Length: 210
Ligand code: 13P
Image (cartoon, rainbow, N blue to C red; front, side, top):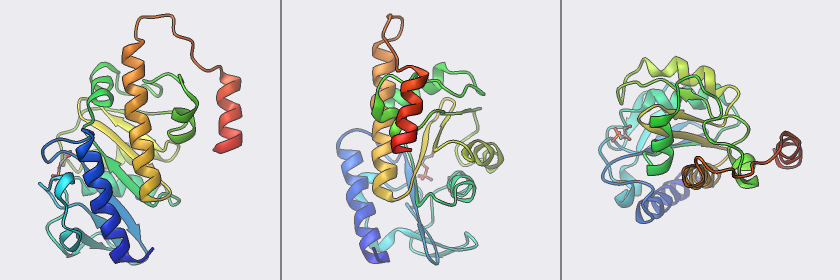
């Protein structure tokens, strides 16, 4: 896909997430890796109303080279995209249920959502490290997220929200949606004797689809 098509896709998927309540107000940001740099949603933009032409462009050195001023969370996205060379995109949301889990989980935990369903395991994987609270836009979060992202497709920022990567933008969005649904299920079933997938079932999924 060329850059104009990716810009269109980013605006379309941002609107889709917004319309379905995965993001409200100006919460959330998205980045996509390009051959010559990165696209990033502009700071204070609404994912529901992105103008493809105004999406920020960063060079390979992460400097701002075009479009509106980029998200304040550029360090968060850089942390993941440099830790995961296979990742083509990163989606950060404040989606309700995942954020709720991020308010309950202890920083340092690696599985705040149990493996209840196959698609959570297939899309998000075995671990979802919980990163301690940082103020939005704080550059200090970069090293913690970078370290955790070496072995995890997604991380959960305490009291803030999920940061989810994927091979493509469509993959990252699908994984962010799956994470949110799994967080919702986990809260719905909290305190019940719900059955989780066994370690052998998790291994089988990751060997087959991982
Ligand atoms: P930006 O508007 O700068 O992208 O920040 C929104 C956000 O989600 C902060 O975490």
